[in-house]
Length: 190
Image: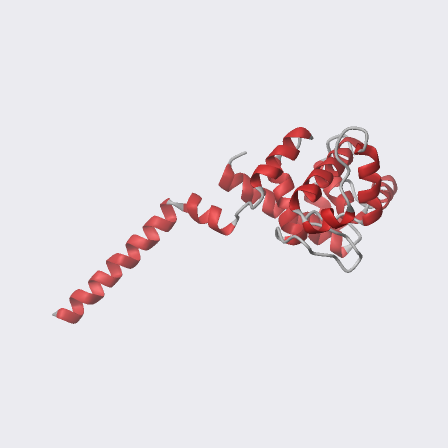
């Protein structure tokens, strides 16, 4: 009788654990999809009038919030900006705010978030609020995305990104960013 009772207790504990996970999925979601640097992301995204959850999704896709990462192509920081792009962005912002160094961009979260959100905002404006096109341009560069849109290679819609974007890396990137963006909106709200 003792063994049966132990199995029942273990089963009840297990069912209780599943019940908690199911009904506390927000807690589980935040554990699975955390947002480090949330204050910095929110601050700079709001300054640029961008959804902070989109910025978080880009950071998650780029570096999973790890500062000090450098891509094989030379992109720096948690938002992975190319040095030439970062210098151009700093030049554009230099009259208005602090100019960051490339070392700061690479080794500190906030400079990367500030410049990355500024760049993302400029892409969103360039593509007339077409977020999938802006995200694709963040990865492949505006020149490539402009060519795809002009030549009809891609129609700029998220629904066709997997089939029409010619660069496998960019196809995967856009898919990954919007996967994380959807998860973040579900966990943290729209």
